[in-house]
Image 1 (cartoon, rainbow, N blue to C red):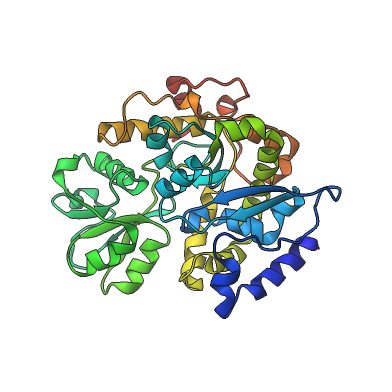
Image 2 (tube, rainbow, N blue to C red):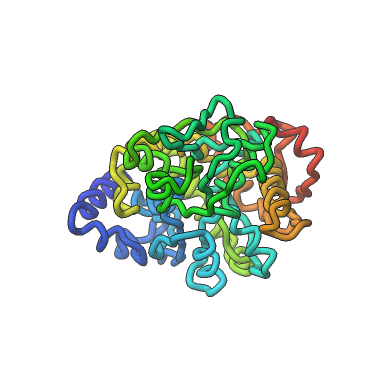
Length: 379
């Protein structure tokens, strides 16, 4: 009852002209709420997220009151433009936890002493999942999602070094093509529609909600391919090693709240889409609703050997392209104990997800071995 009442109140407060003031960054939803665990003073925690549909679980959880139930007073920073910006804030001590995907690899190699304590997107039951990724082609481009060889000779917009770049590499491998068979045009997601409309690119590859907005904004543009299981998709809850070691109970409470939020989003995608419109300025409701249909398929906060394998796979792909150094050791960065405890203590929060394959299940002393993990995790 407390959660539902709170959600409705916040939705009203975040409407219209008050949206940016009430739901922008650097804010909690309700700072004067009493502690949710025995009346003790809530523990303060600062968190950051990137302005993207698949990151909405963090602000949605704050809005719905799940962190309060764990006696955490979570303060959100202004949404960061990129994962790199979020990691810079983590390194600078501006936030305690951030949500980041592939940029975590380079950041770790550059010396940020980070640890991965959970997922905000991905899968612990299989290796490849990419439902939030799509190819949008111009009407006269000749790109056909059912025949990936039609990518040959085309100008393809991606963000070099990001997950959409890796998705393109997965498509090329499937088609038997090489990177040299196409022209990669480094294009940030907000610029994709303009690039497609002006002929700067023949097709753009990007994550939600951009494929949806591109098809709406560019005459003749069409989403010719979505997902398909060409690559693993990764997105982690990241903190510093020092913070995790000093605050194990806080991390456990944080992960419990995130698991509660993810389950609520899976069960209520339209309500989650409504939340996205309040926390991601400029996001239209119908766009958010369409994007959320895909996003909820990747809401799996658990850890298994499949998550280690996914990170190892993408780190290898990035190294082949020269975007990161070779030899990234995933064992150094996963800290599975907190989420494993949440999984053990709260199995109901994950009961609606596909089961983790027995051979892929891990414990706190797990050491990644690629060959063994590859056998354990279906692709």
